[in-house]
Length: 373
Image (tube, rainbow, N blue to C red; front, side, top):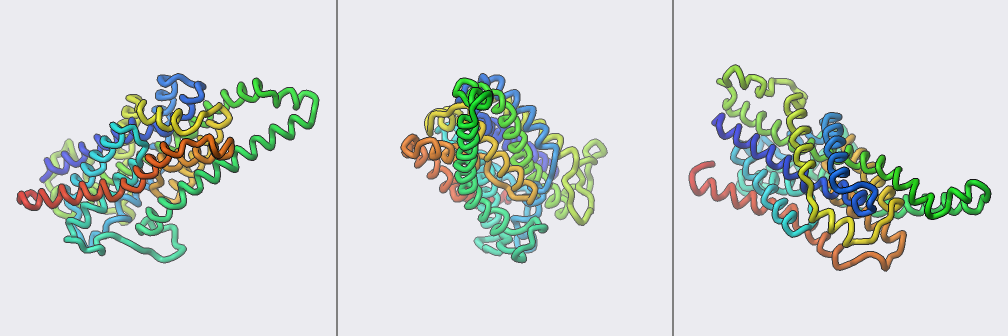
């Protein structure tokens, strides 16, 4: 049983590594597309900021660990979590291979929901669907913590991208009309130069926000694995060198420091390996970007991710940055958006949770048929 727990933790770290190179492409696509940083420079910046972001909070991790699966209805075994992870990993690799910026967050959530339904024999009570309306302090509830952010974050990303561009252009227009040295600063060459430097800061903010939100999801999965293993007695006879794995009996079920550190480092390693296919789709195929557009898109997306992480919401980096780029492109010229590319991306979003969930559901059913679950 302990061996299976270790296998699940290893699978979780594989997912974290894949999340690093899969979603890093989302977080650095704009700064590469605008040629402010080379791909290598952008990847290293994102890796460092992912590490910093991953070390600065656990609200999202607690949502994943304690707020999605109803442990009173379904027993969260290592097999359940392994199938959930495999569902997310397989779907991530498929979309990475196709160059589609799908959501690792939703792949993981979909996998967890699919595996939980299979373990609960299709009892939807195995998922925690509701919580007290207006109570945002509890890290529970598919409705408040997954469904609402899944719908609202793309809309917010698009609108913030539009608003940010309008504000920047309005500021530049005011400077032009002011005359004197302000008008000189508003010249296109100086504006591009300024935002070329400013985009380094916005790209760093985006990398921080990605690590702050996304790295925590795997922390939650590992914590959930250990909580389940403790409940079944799998951790009762841990050897002394693995004593750190015991989650303890704290009522708040805090995420252990070693989980935070391990996930942060693994995500940074995955980030350093890059994901150029998705960078090409986001940074070049949707709309042509200049530094001011990249700055607006990254700042908008990173703000959404950081606010969502504060409330323990596992928001998709992919959705927020993709729709922010769409918003920026729409503000620039509605006809500049390449709708065929956007359509492919939206379909990947729609399919992610049911696809990853279906894979996890089928895998657990297979294990049950083989007598391994």
